[in-house]
Image (cartoon, rainbow, N blue to C red; front, side, top):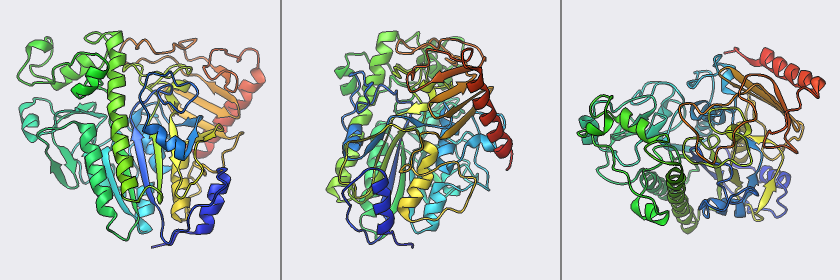
Amino acid sequence: MKLFSFLSLVLLTACTSIKSQGPEFTSPPNVLLIVIDDQGYADYSPFDHYNGEAQTVHMARLAKSGTIYTQAYVTAPVCSPSRVGFLTGKNQFRWDGPASWGPGLPDSVKTIAEYLQENGYATARIGKSDLGRNFHAKYDKREYPLRHGYEEFLGFNAHAHDFWLHSTSMRERTPDPYGTSAVLGPLLHNEGEKSYEEGYLTDILTNEAIDYIGKRSEKDQPYFLTLAYNSVHHLIHEVPQKYLDLYEVEPIDNYDPSDSLKFLHHAAGSYSAYYDKYSRLGAINQEAMRKYYLANLHCLDDNIGRLLDAMENGDQYENTMIIFVSDNGGSPLTGADNAPLTGGKYALWEGGIRVPMAVKWPGQKKGGLVEERVVSTLDLLPSIAKVAGVKLDDPTIDGRLLSEPDSDRLLVWKWQKTWAVRKGDWKLTNTNENHWKSEPSAQYVEPIRDDLSLKLFNLSVDPGERNDLSEAMPDKVQELQQAYDLWCDANLNKY
């Protein structure tokens, strides 16, 4: 096992404007990566644009003890490619030419879990594992967590999982328990499954994480734990009663495979019919959708509080790097609020790719710091490696240290037929509007134009992308398009 370098910690914390030195560690620190699903930019209380409605008291604890990043970007506006990006430190469209929902994970691309495992870390993943390919019980596939660096896994391989139904008996009663969009039934557990007859999934994942961390405290070995919640993804209405009561919203019956009368024009007892019905406006109205979202987020926040309490009580908080991040912008379909950013999940507007993020560094004494320069979730891999004392030898890693943000950095995105580039304050994109499958929730900020034309914005004064400067500044358009084209020519389809 490589020992952690105290000198590296001092340099790292100095670069993040942390003046006081942390304690000297005799071994590498633990790393906890908490991934949230579809959280809105304005639904995070440490941000200036917080709207005051969302309960994020415990999520904000990481801001108080660490650093928040107000211009943190993901590599895609949907979950699968975005998660591949921060798992590998590489833009996933390097090998996924169509820039699709399912980039997968090539054998030749290493993950942060593999780097840390090779350097003496215990590694575990709890919750959602969605890399876009080989869903469900494909234990032998590269996309399965145990095949890319995680020694333990409890969770699911899909875009979503029912929050309440986790039993083998429920799966056996359901005509369509599997699908690329959402699943129900027992959770995958290492090379098998684990069935739960009762319980709420956010609570279950937290309990399992607390149990894992408690057991690791007895070991003389650092750990890397990825805790990937499916909250606040659809099905957004599935929330424990006490939270529904707080937001004065009525419960909706859970899925029952024997009840086909509610799903006319669909296969009798189809779970996909239930999922489709409640993952859009219609059966749920505008006001109720926002309330379900807030209730779901409130429950998630309380669970993060339980986890942080357990770490503090077990004396692990100080010696752990904790990263909190959303996998993409808030969904236009759930009631998430991304204001003042335009758009949301499914498109390359700022609301789809700029996300809440906070990092508590090991040994950090001064918190409440704000980093306003541009960073990316690509930076998680090299930053974790630096803290863990792991040497990276791959020049194609796109991330850089979070401790060294660059105001003139070039970032590129490719998503299906759309693309975007940011350099300094300027962003050029051909993105269009994308609600994907439904009318958006009332919180959604509509884009100024719904087409594939080039649009230019100065994000330093116009983060909401309301003033298109492409006609007024053709030279800037040409400069940014050329920068994007050159990057693509040099880096794409090399795998």
